Image (cartoon, rainbow, N blue to C red):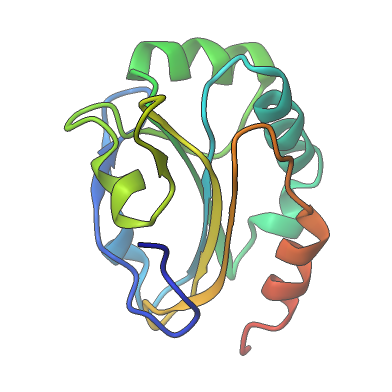
Length: 154
C-alpha cells in the first residue's frame, strides 16, 4: 500500500553507514524530512539521482529539511558508495528485516527484493506532504521535490 498526502508517516529507525541509528520521529517538530527510497547503491540511475541531490544539496537539505536516502543495501555497501560519491547526507540501510521500511511506504518490489524509487516529503508535523512512487528503471523528476519543499509552511 502506497502512502498518500496527509497520511501519518510510519516511524522507523534504520542504521547509517557507521551503524548509527537514525529515527524518523526524532525530526518531528524540528524539520521536514525528504525520504528518497532507491533500489541499489552503485547502480546507474540511483547514482545519477543521488549525485543530483548531492550537487544541489542546499535545495533539498537545509535548516528546514533533512534528506534521508534509503535502500535495502547493507551498511558496508552504503559506506563505500557514500565515500566514492561524496554524499553528505545519510544513506540508511533497510537491509534487515529486509525491506520492512520500504514495504511500510509502498516502495518495495517483492519479486526483486529491492526498494523502488519512492519519494516522500514528511512535514514537521509527521504527515506526508508529498508522495511519489516510480517503478524499476523509471527515473524521478526532482523538480517536483523542489516544488514540494517550497510549498512547505514556513
